[in-house]
Length: 223
Image (cartoon, rainbow, N blue to C red; front, side):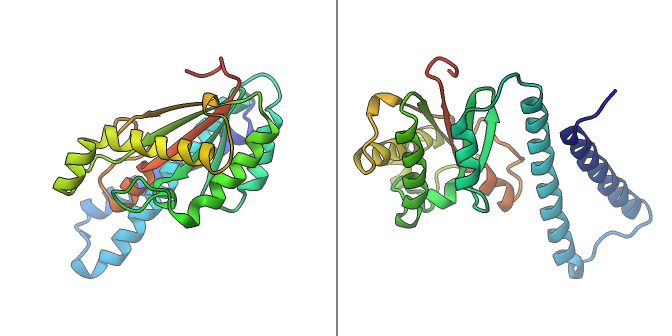
């Protein structure tokens, strides 16, 4: 079977994860259990495993993309160029462009107001949307599984579901009020903690799961 570049990268990531697992098992079987002095090494390995899991996810998505028919919309290519080298990930799903924005880039902890330093991200995205007025925008908020930490947050939002929806609404309101995009081009929603991309058992994993997903595509292509 002929392998694509994406499938070869995926195989390499999976083999690396298997090698790490066997290495840790061998250490345990030989009695080489890390001491407290090895904690920095353990934390480094945790970060490397998380990074490999994320690469594994991205390679799988690339495989899906490679199997899709048709040329990606020019908006996708524009966003790849605009956000190259930033924390914003630009992916393709069929005819849709998917932007994954870290929650920490847009919001302070427990807040739904867009951080001033994040306005440039929405400004750049809005410029592209003005150039392609035929495309619809879906904004979906995601959180980790940590309960809301204060009584005031619980009174205001209830649960992570409401918090994620409020954050999606904040993004939409800024793009409408500050960057003059028509409100009818937007659909917003919140998924709360139910669609994590990695496990929520580390600080790094929880940070990855707190995100805004912005899907841009033909109005009838994504629900």
